[in-house]
Image 1 (tube, rainbow, N blue to C red):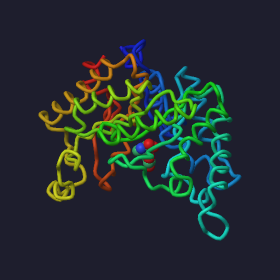
Image 2: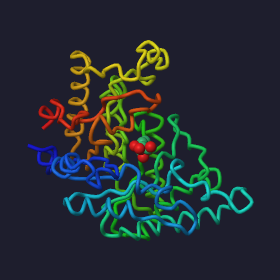
Image 3: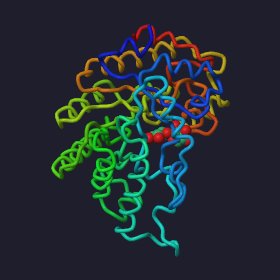
Length: 340
Ligand code: XIL
């Protein structure tokens, strides 16, 4: 049984993939992606910086290959992401003298970017993370360049432009720590405002970068209830469960890092009790996703295996993590058998 087959009819089971995987550098990985998952998202190649490094300059090679890879494997392809404060060229916000552009100019640049990317893959990408990470954890707007120049309306404009560029594409708002009550409430308020303004919004993406304790099951379920009540679907867009000490669980990571004296404390194997705890955490969360499968449309793991996870080196440079469903040798972890 594969993850894709086991979840069929409940939700799409997705994975974020990198260009080596798209290009088949390691065929084992490309085959696992093709066989185990029903959806793919690009880990980086569709972001603003790689697709639109300068004004009037677009680079499509990688994104084209990524979309073709998903189509070849009959997978649902998600676009990530159109408007984000990170991984975006600074040119977007400045004029020739290096000063902030006017609201009109930024809005027009946003339009051009969104029309170009969404238009290119019209009918081939099922839905887009239109705006990524617009809120702080306390529920206030992140003071990004978009916000500073355009105010919160930048979000509405992004959704309008995306809908104009592909009226059939689903449109999502995506963020992390959605389980934090203040942040969840702010997102619900945004959903209401977008709907009141006549914008299409199909789902909220909860990135779901999780730790060993937090967010709790209860906090996660509460966020699902709030989103469901707001009349949007839910996507688990970037799921991983770090096995390492985290400030989110009350750990002082720099202290524990020094204590471990090495980058990879589990190099010779994760201790059985720690692995057990991680397995339970993954199973509990997956059970919750299944419980809400009437509104959870997709569960996407952020990376195929522990070797390639972005958490190797984040938030501590060089520190190795074990947060996803396949290990460093591309073996499916035993917990997957219990999930499916
Ligand atoms: C990460 C990628 O995994 C890394 O390879 C890259 O260096 C930085 O971005 N939230 C998001 C994702 O929405 O796009 C980020 O992906 C992880 C956090």
